[in-house]
Length: 204
Image (cartoon, rainbow, N blue to C red):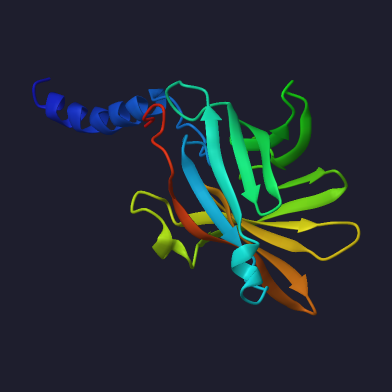
């Protein structure tokens, strides 16, 4: 019997390790939208010539998010351009992101729950599908802590050009391309990223 104990221990150790891994809670899904208060993203349309490209820039700033550990469920975002400022409310849940009213009514589904495992969906007559993962070419402007690998999604409307958008974790859309004359033209691209004010709470 004593000789069997070391052999038995060798067989049981891997099984115990697998059991321990199985008992761990599943990892929380990544959030593919901006959610940290004060985070400000600036976009421009590279297909425009200068100076229109700079003057028509769009600024996206996280104005308010629920104070709680981890990414919040409701996120107030301010969109600012030369035409003025427009506040919108985003709701993120189980990897999905929706545009909602102040009362919580869904206006549009940007990304479905379960994204990117949910690889195809339809919203307002537009068909969406996940194309795959890719590292963003403009990642050099991101902070060192940002994940440069995101998910490309293609939108196919019933009428009009197809559009492909790259979403990065904790940032959301960083680049969009539109099909024009058989080529893919970048029409929306992140050109600046930073904090205009400190977050109300530092979340992990």
